[in-house]
Figure 1: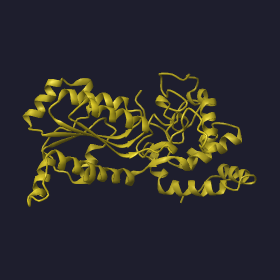
Figure 2: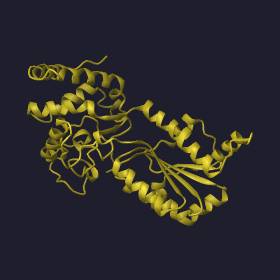
Figure 3: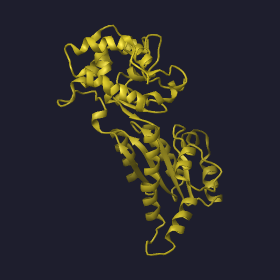
Figure 4: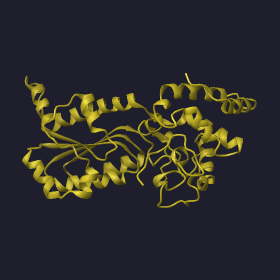
Length: 328
């Protein structure tokens, strides 16, 4: 098992002189590294050793109290590993999609042929990702989903490039009865909402289910509001992120002390994190991430830009703990 390096052990020993709880934080980080962190895909084959990255991350700043704050925030991360994603895939399909199909077909459980009817309903449903971050092939394989459609495009691309008439023609020609749109993570919901709006407007007579595996509170509100706008739309969230995994811009009276420290550090260190880029429309946007979401969320395949840049951003003056892969 990888061991913490001397730099980190020295710091933990120093901090423990005045804070005995730091030993528990240390043990939890070691456990999380073994259970989750060492599988982070963008660093798995490059910069793969978590504890080297941790040393470099803490070394971005010289103040030991700031280093301690970064160290203490790690067990508060909402980290979603491979197994967790797979469980969310199964929950989405076996619970929410099955329930939706039963209602829209509809299926009568007194019908002795109801299993065959449900299977046919799945075959007649077009499953597509909303953006390319959702692994649609894994979703099909894990759930053993049959399909008769040769295309599974993401709606982000369709919205930007496709002719609505061509989409409607494909749906009609292939006798697609209904559509399931899937996304792994929704932060503010602005991007996903525009794609769902496009789909519902293109195909107003087709029942559409939008499923987000993991959704932040603002995203829940944004997507749920679309249901009132489009009569053919249903929205479901498999996991709604609890407020305690977000560092809000405004200080909450009952928030953990470490959140107060990290908020202040994120603001104070932002120009170091970005190598001089001021907060604004350019990546990585703001000290608390895109739309000031304040996420502590890390997916095994990438870090959402709604999470704090000090966790994921790479610059000449900042080494991230979990490097985010981003479009230029």
